[in-house]
Image 1: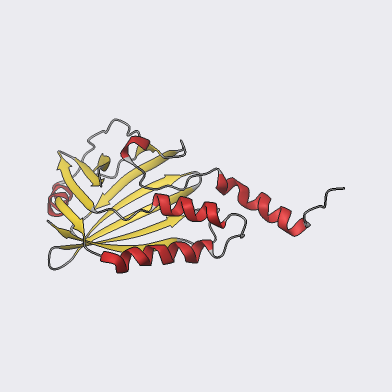
Image 2: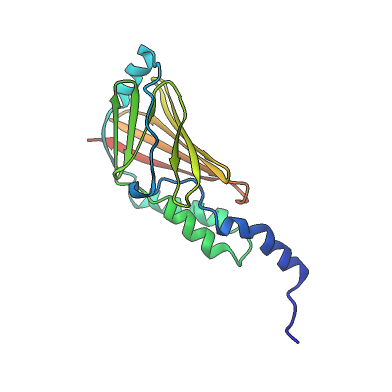
Length: 198
């Protein structure tokens, strides 16, 4: 007779299995996303000025220290998970949170275009929500909010959420704070990256 798994382990596997087939919202390669047609919306002049203030080309300058910090943040999250699913969780979080080397921001009338290593997302400046398709085929609601101090990107799906907060600083620097949350993750994934205007 084949031995039975302990009840506790079986329950843990059933609880965590949904995450194994669900990609968390992430900035995947451009070909993995389909962006819905953009409605220009009704941005006001302050939003247009804020977008123009962020517009430009940036490059990642955080070096090995910030890359290692991302790896540590992922390890902290998966370290709280069942050992059986840690490798899959680690792989998916790492794949969805690769450190980009280039960032491009531009304004197209009343729409904002944000591109990380060619992964382009466009949304109306006034916060109107559009839809993108994630790497797992799930529909994600995407919107941006902007003022003179901060640009916020929000990706929301049934299985989780990703928020990018970009803030301009001195010496032509831009700080990116990323927060990824999901009901299937034991804690939020948080990290910070630094870019400099080219």
